[in-house]
Each structure stands twice: as C-alpha cells, then as structure tokens.
Length: 237
Picture (cartoon, rainbow, N blue to C red):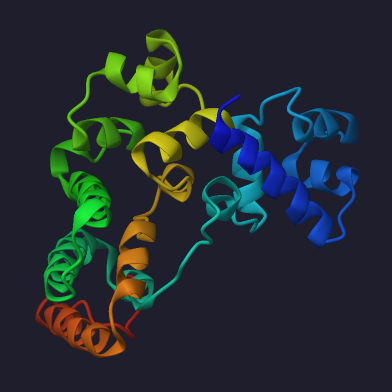
C-alpha cells in the first residue's frame, strides 16, 4: 500500500466521522455493504474505480481525500460553463495562454512552475483534435512523453493492466489514482471527470495570483469571449 493511499484512508475515516456517518451509511454512498466498507477502511481491500467514482458522484471531495487539498472553483469554471460548446476548445486555449502570462507576471518559478507547466501541457492535449477520442490516461502519458511501460512503472501496475486502463476497458482503482497524484501530481478529479474540461490545476494557479492580477486576466479572457461570441451570461448552446 502506497503512502498516498494510506493517507487517503485516514482522511476518508476522518471525513466519515466528521460527518457523523456510520460505516453502513458510507458504504451505501459507495454502493457497497457495511462489511465491505469496513475492510476498505482498514486497508484489507482496495477502493475500486467504481467506488471512487461513486464518492465523487455523491459530492464527496475526492481531490481532498487523495491529496489533502480541496477542490477549487474559480471564475475560470464559470467562463467555461457559460461558453458555447463549439467554442470551448478555443476558450481553453485562451485561458491556458492567459494563465501562463499570469505565472510570468507573478514570477512563479521552481518546482511549482514545473508542476503547473506539466498540468497545463495536459490541458493542451485535451483540445487537440487528434486526441479528442482518446482517454485522459492516454493524454496524461503523451503530455509527459512516456511509454506505456513507463506509465505502468509510475503507477506500480503491470503493463497489461495499464493498457486496459488507458483503453477505457477498466477504471483505475484508488491506489492507482493515488500513485498518479503522488508521482505526477495530477488530482483525481481529472480522471473522474473525463467527459468535461477539468480546470482543477488552473484554479490552483489562479488562486495564487493577487486579486489585481486576477481582475486584469479575467478582463482579457472576457474580451476574447466577446470576439468569439462566447459571451458569459448567454449559457452553453
């Protein structure tokens, strides 16, 4: 059991008690019995991909459970949601470029800049036409210029199992998702929300900017939205 997964179990247990939920209640949320849940909490069984997804579906912050950092929501999410679907790829590219300019203005450097840059590269892959039908796992691998064998090593799984995950034939369990965060820094919400553009990494960068810089960057993005007739307030079409 990885250190990251062990910490997740501790946070899950603490969350359940903080919410005054019994093991039976939490098991119901995850779609399992109390007996099964008890084994999960003790580390005798690994939380499956489906069980992890059920936590997310029931509004439990899986990003916090695995990373210790809660999910963030910023104006970037609002802009993306209010943009017409056919323009979202262009908007994402604009947001990525604008946030990068903000990083330079805020002089974000070192390990933080390296992590943010890698996550931004993943977002670029999400809008490439030739990767639109690929799974998020493929995009993560491409963004990090890794082979399937190297990804399997990072996640501590067999190459055969990783290939099944990348093809979308099976969900990655919580231990694999924890390894992804521990070794590459990607939050689990990126995996669990594959059908939408996940801005979790950009939101963390955005929160690091001063309010004055946020306002300046937001105005620039909104101007771009107006040029594309992707105006916040009109709603997705």
